Length: 219
Image (cartoon, rainbow, N blue to C red):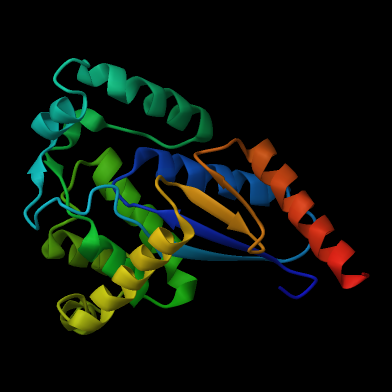
């Protein structure tokens, strides 16, 4: 890693509430950052790679994750509260489908880099605020249209093997690194942490990452 830059690699899943919060915390941290320029790369991860293309019924799926013993609102309370503090909304009661997230990751990978942030946010909003099925290609194309993207070009891309291979390469990389949960952040390919850590923690790790880089430059 060259000096004068903070590279942040973020592994995430589009159906992960903590990933949405982690992304928002990163945004809040960057708003306070006055150090070196920052370059962010987002990478796909599947919380559950076995979900079928049509998805599962959301409430049944969540009940099963809790072994049938955990009230759903208990699952939802913590991300609701932390999301509210960070400025993002979770309307879990609107979600009907626990989606297969492959196509949503393909959409993010398909758009130019300068549009990826806004598309990610739009996908998160569609799922967590409006309860839309982000495993459905038509929903994803609606999201693309609302963000000014050419769906005539995007549709065949989303239906192709090329983007899927790109997403699956991210999954393989996560497995190689040993990532077992997301969000997962890597700073300058040296420092890493898992979870939706606070903006203050992110800033501290960014500072540590730049200090490490500077020390190596002068060794």
